[in-house]
Image 1 (tube, rainbow, N blue to C red):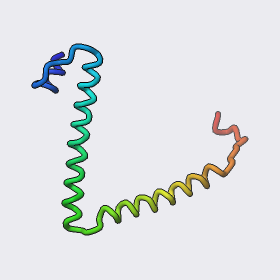
Image 2 (image 1 turned 180 degrees about the vertical axis):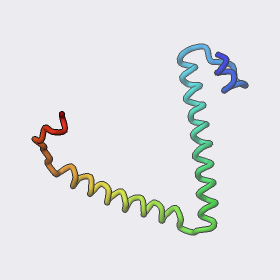
Image 3 (image 1 turned 60 degrees about the vertical axis):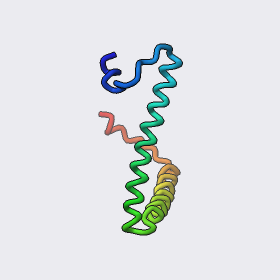
Image 4 (image 1 turned 45 degrees about the horizontal axis):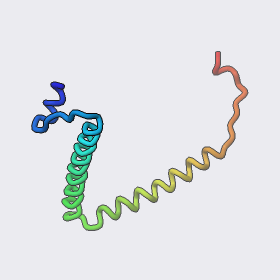
Length: 89
């Protein structure tokens, strides 16, 4: 209870489980909105100095992701069975 009052000092604690759940979901949503807003503001700041920065990052991410997925598929298609029991000793 003490921790609750430190984290949420202005609101009284909810009494029923349904109200507790709703309260926690509301707090989580507001926290995520704050985080996303700060990320968006940072991206706007970067974009002001470097036009098309976000577009370039997304294109780079997806092109690299495609390469990594191709390498992963290739590695998974190789059947490797070792009958060497020396690593068990």
